[in-house]
Structures are given as structure tokens and as C-alpha cells.
Image (cartoon, rainbow, N blue to C red; front, side):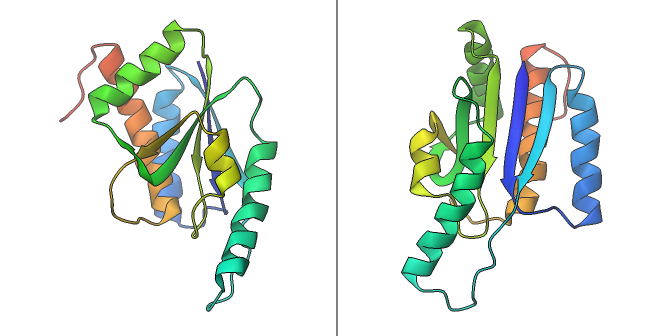
Length: 159
């Protein structure tokens, strides 16, 4: 299985990079993982609705350019469906069973994802109704994908 994780902005925090690298290394035994970072737009402190929409659209264009037409896209969005780790694992298994060997998880920038990206997504996934820094979500996502593969294989993993 080929998994892309497409995120807006460059990861700067060393502790997050180390965590992501660790889980990416662990995941390599189960799937091919590709991390893609697209440039973020600088947002003024007091951006208007129109400016925020324009920023999300520009970031969205960059995201969409990285997605192949045959890729199953899962967008991380607050309004998405909440799943347990077991349900995420089952979803990944079903995608593989039905020939969807390319999956892309998409994490937007500080303003979220554009409507164009959300429309392109095959499904929306939410980790919480709370808002998290998108860099932290990248670490949480990679850990949950790793956990999903461990669950699929019936391998032990702490609860």
C-alpha cells in the first residue's frame, strides 16, 4: 500500500520531526509512506473572510497538484467523521481489499482546507471537535496509521 501524507507548511519543531521520523520508520514495514509538504500562505493577523478564502484556495491548489486521480483522499477536518483506531484500521483494510492501494491523508494549514480539497476528498476524518496545530496532527496521524497496521496484523500495541 502507498500512503501519502500531504500537509501545508514546513515542520520546524525538532521534537515533532523526531516523532514523525520514528513512526514513519516503523510504518515502512507495512506500507510505502511519502511525506509531502506544500508551501503555506502568509496570513495577515486580521485577515478578512475574503482573504482567508483566498489563502485556503492557494494552499488548496498546491495540495490538489500533489494528488493523483486514482488516489483515495482522506481529508482531516473538524466536521469529518470520528473513528476509533479499530475503525480506521478496518477502513484501511477495506480500501486495500477493494483495490485502493493509494491513499492520501491531507492536513490543511492554520485556516483549514479549501472547499476544492474537501470536494476532492473521498472522505473527511476528524480526530476531535477541538482544534489542534496542524504540525501536531501530522504526528498524531502517523501514529494512528501505524497503530492501524498493527491492529490489522493482530500485533500487540499498547492501548
